[in-house]
Figure 1 (cartoon, one colour):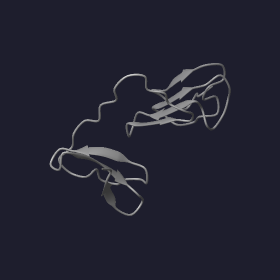
Figure 2 (cartoon, rainbow, N blue to C red):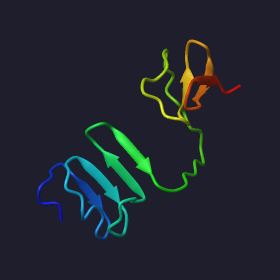
Figure 3 (tube, rainbow, N blue to C red):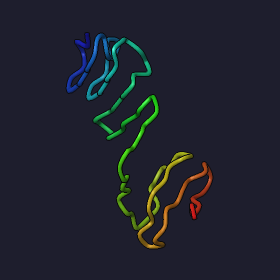
Length: 96
């Protein structure tokens, strides 16, 4: 139980049981440090620790500029260039 934090959402048996922070999201059926779904409402971060299957169209919101603070594997749709771009850990590259 998180007695010191606030604004948390824990779904599942013992999900987030050891979390001491605030504004967190845990979805799992056990007390684990890598839940199936983890989120931090403070910085709008969502992590999925598993495979994601998309059965319909996935739409990336077009951006006019490169996202700041990218991580290797990030993808966005560049509305200025009219193409998808991916970050390789060093630079942004056109995907096609």
